[in-house]
Image (cartoon, rainbow, N blue to C red):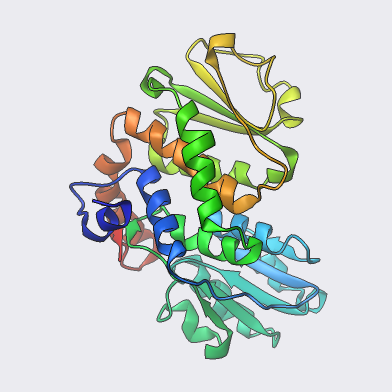
Length: 309
């Protein structure tokens, strides 16, 4: 059964790991075109929560955008004269995105929503022509792999086959078979991929909570007292960084990274590795997601299910 077939058929008793979601996203996007995102504003206010705002930082890096999340958007919306547009990014078009879009329309500025849900509540506050919908897979709640990979690939235009080849030839053969022996993982990334730190941190929060520690630094950032306290069961995984300093020599895993690789490729590669780590540990996420979905539904006053169709 292909990864895409697994995502199409799984139930809450058989939650797939993140690497399956990565492979399924690549399968889908290999056969489905991604709509271009043609927003030419110079000073947009870009809003989102969680990994949505990080994906937006990648996509709008070349503009003079100001970015805000669920903790800062209300303050930013008090000074709309600073911006020429407002762009909200949200896979579901729910939760905080609803309030963001509702309050954004009051400013009189052009408001756009980048989402994977055409009929979301947030979309009701945005002109229909300004709702940009990207394809997605059926996935466990919070995975948001196809949801944010799609817009990123629409921006970077990386060939899917090149991404697949990188994972199968450069990443997968180098992965250890004993990820379960480690309780801590530190990823080292080149400076040009600094935004991935937050995306990966969110993934560890979601998948492991307090049980498995994940830390993510650029090769320059880690120089600043990040390894004062070390552990013999901490694995250092570096992408395109020559690590001869951090961790025990036997606890270093290096994965090559060519200069032409962009965010879409490294997002899929790092998510793939996280999925392999997930598979080697107890299924913390699978055991907890149903209960969490009930709690989140009450917190947001919206129906949230363990599986996002």
